[in-house]
Amino acid sequence: MALSRRSVNLRRLVLLVWVLVAFFYFYLSYDYIRVTMNDRAFADYLQRLVQVAGIERRSATDVRDLVLVKAEELAVPLHREQVLIRSGLDSLDISVNYDVQIDVPLLQRVIYTKQFEHKVKYQSPR
Image (cartoon, rainbow, N blue to C red; front, side, top):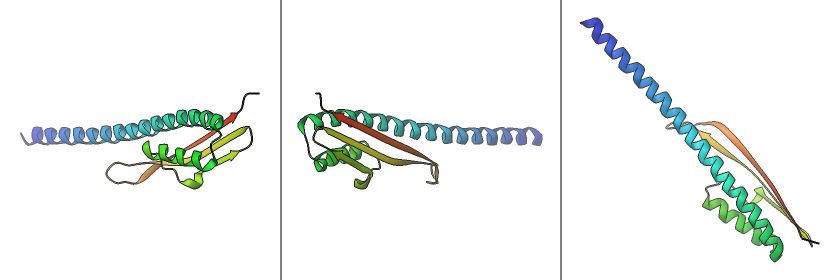
């Protein structure tokens, strides 16, 4: 009887460990997918923004403010100095570089840092 009770407790312990491992991997997967989807939406926005801002000949400060507002909306950790904008008479270049940290659930320790880099250009039609 004692052997069977020990066996049942061992099975429960193994099940608990597997549930914790599954939770850990599902959380990391969810966090990674969420970050990647937000970055994809941000990249699409940058493509649209550079075309519209280039046609409307918006100033660099206006474009930077629009980029930062969208980054905040998508929870992209972006600071003003990470957005580089070069504008000329018939061109507009936007370069954005940022890192996103993916952390361990409950411990809040960073285990992976994903780097994103976007470079979009507008050239006016001739």
